[in-house]
Length: 390
Image (cartoon, rainbow, N blue to C red; front, side, top):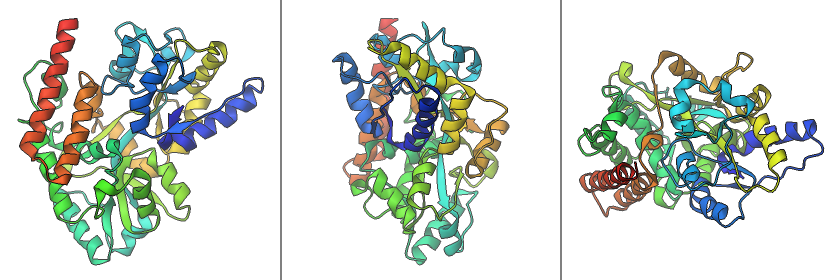
């Protein structure tokens, strides 16, 4: 079972695996992020889960590697061939205290994905400053479009604009923010998270987004881009494959979402994205391990990421990056990427609170102060539980 955003990537891997292993039958089902995070843990506990499935790095949601391993739902992969090639820089979110329980497959980013054709049609260029971003929103509206299609009816999408902005408003000047949060020395309320949420709502008021984002799903947002109604969308790099499928004649580019008027400050969230685990109670363990090994191989990594417009989580010299993510590649080299925020949070409650608070902000039923306070409360409760358990 894989994420719907990774359908093209997984399809390419499965086709090659079938050719190499004609004696193994592989079937794949796909679900969106909300469904996976909600249903997959329950399916595993009930003995009704697939053999291999999407697992999130870190500890930010119910289907994360830390949460699933804690409940003994994942088979250990520490001795699989790919493990020796996992870079030390990503081990804090791929491994648990007791070993390796997932195979990291792609390094992705969260940023603005623009249609080159639609951007040219409104006479715009990719902005490098926040003021330029707002001006581009105005230009899009003058041409009867919106700059960004926003699908906040899909809960997981609600986080993406904040993440893209927080990369700069928090981490550009406080790169140790996550560690300081763990020590209780930082809070969401008294940090650049406030600026990011303010800008998120300012962009809404400026008309940067779809007219009814709370009623627009992820797929509907992509359709708006494909139809030229929106110049682009703020998404994970994996969405490039879906956009190309919907609009094969369009060309797309990903760029960091600027949050200040100082381009040198701009950062982009970049981290391990797609990863897979093995069901601890799989009835097809030998075949499933063969598939896990293929995902961790150079061939498997390259096939997956060529199809998805992402980068291999296990780097190799034979991979040629998609031109659409050229900026991500450069920022990875320059060190101007930051981890996905939820990968360092103490439990899934923080992410779920973030989802609900963004929806409430867009519905007008809360304000930024209360939203950040709710996230601080969820974080503190998670940190206290982890401290007590330790």
